Image (cartoon, rainbow, N blue to C red; front, side, top):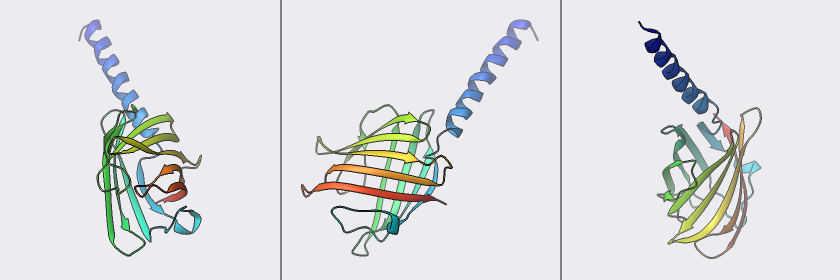
Length: 158
């Protein structure tokens, strides 16, 4: 192997390793269960349950799937795939939003913005605790009914 070949191989391994480090540093990735007792929904009512499955997607994004039961006992299913670039992507299943953008602040913090029919509806500030066990969302804005939203939603890592 020539010296140039070795340098190219080392460079490729370093770049690949950086990608793995970036993915590993995303503390949002994992399965999260809603803790209804620790959450506050204004306006209510709160859902009965929700489980998030967040997977790494691409080099800088997530695939998000949420399944649960609403306050009336009906099943819910939300999903999207987004890069942390602040660009809007389709948000399926959420009655209050049809588009979402994600922007990473740091490994434990994400800001999201939702839209419905082209109008910004809400902002969500997501923080994963330093120990990686709790994911807290602070949501403000309006729901599809035009009501002011001030939610604090707490999830626990499974």
